[in-house]
Amino acid sequence: MAGAAHCSLQAKRLLLDPKFEGYKLSLEPLACYQLGLDAAVAEVQLRDDQYTLDHMRAFGMYNYLHLDSWYQDNVYYVDQFGRVMNLSVTLDTALQKPREVFRLPTDLAACDNRLCASMHFSSSTWVTLSDGTGRLYLIKSGKRGSSATEKWEIVFNEELGSPFIVAHSVSFVKSDTHSVAVLLLRVEKDELDTKGSGFHVTLEWVTIAKGKEGDHRYEIIKRRVLQGKSVPHYAAIEPSGDGLMIVSHKPFTFMQSESDELEENDEVKVSNEKKAPLYYWQQTEDDVTITVHLPQDITRDDIKICFSPDNICVTLKDQPPLMEGKLHSSVDHESCTWIIREDRSLEISLIKKNEGCRWTELIVGDTRGEFIMDPSQCSEIAESLMHLTSEVMNPNPEKENPPCNAQELEECDAFLEDGASLSRFDGDTLKVTHVINLGSNQYLFSVVVNPKEMPCFCLRHDVDALLWQPHSDQPENMWEHIATFNALGYVQASKQDKKFMACAPDYSYAALCECMRRVFIYRQPTPLATVLYNRKEGRQVGQVAKQLVATLEASDPILGFQATSERLFVLTTKTLFLIKVNSGN
Image (cartoon, rainbow, N blue to C red; front, side, top):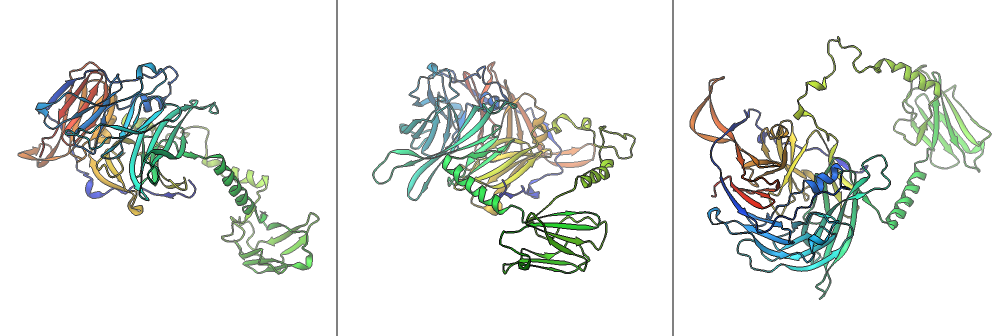
């Protein structure tokens, strides 16, 4: 990440509410509808060899319900017979049974080593689908939705190695060629990792494109692999297919092919040769000694050294000056000397005018030299800093300002993953171009607000939850703060059994569900129809934010959770629930 621009997220003050008083529990009834499924959801339990936290995050907490953001209130899931089932809602009181739109050619029951089937809607007419066995399908779906009649057609399917899930995909046209870029997520065994979990995470960025001139077949034109040590919270390809953004606890890097490695090794060798120190220097209380290695053909007559109280210039033969510039501090230029030693090195002695002054550099702004510290100087510096350290955690507890006590923090203020970062990778150079250290801004969830843009991600900022929209085509405003859910960061931290979080694309509410039965809904503040006073302060309250709780009539665990502007969809093993949150326009 050496060449990456270090950025920060700029919150919009107008979207923050410092006077937010909290959520009021509302007892208003929520209309809840349920549909029994013809066949159970194709849930895949973790195997004995999938025991790490990364396996749990990637596959154990997988959202089996897929929202089609291109069409309003359209959700999909895959059942145990390999059927892709769709529910399209137009009227809550006239719900139809989920209908089959596609059937996977693979017999899922026959595959022991598979992951859960996964899908992503690349555009309004294209779908990427994985059966969980390592095969990727690119499907031309035509227009989807309630009135859709077109049959889903496979235009590409290929075995791509070990099993994966589809993390994200985009459809785009470049140079008159239609392409689909897909991001595949794997958790793989790492034989070299003997101290960690023994696994690493890979994101494979696959680009599939239509053939040239008359060849209507789709084929893979590019495969790139990123590797990291933690499952990304968020990973999405830019709409143009030119870049990739990742939010993760530990950094990801591109794995290079052999040819790329050879080229990079050559570049590293050249850069290392360039970075070899031009000179070495040492210092004492009284003087500074500079050592320069001389070429074989240089004689004493070829060396010209000019001393002045504040500057030095060293020239060999008729070449440009080897060293030239302002010294860190003044010297007694009349007492400075130089000699050629037996090992063909030039040794220059500078006498300090200010004795005892420690120089931090030789020539101001010149980084071509290397300072060599004497062992006795190292021990002196260590001894002078000894009073700043202690072997005792809090050696002086009676001190007027004691250090921060971690026990004073509440449990929901503790962040286990305070090293998370947001990185943007360039698709051509495979380098990180932008990076943001998220620190304690805990990742909460992602949501598609506009399907033509990248998914938004929600982060905790203090007690609030802020929604950020990436703009890959706006380098100066690459991440825009578009909405705030007041105190949601604090509230969600108290829900120890929470499994999924979501919000409405119009930001009207946020919701979270527990592993079983309960769903919590948090509405944005709305004006009151009646007059309400704050008893403590004696002032009128203008608006109230409501919290609602729904309890599902189901004993099965929740497997999927999606939110639209009007409804919440909750999927269990054998039932699909619809909760009417907002009435339509």
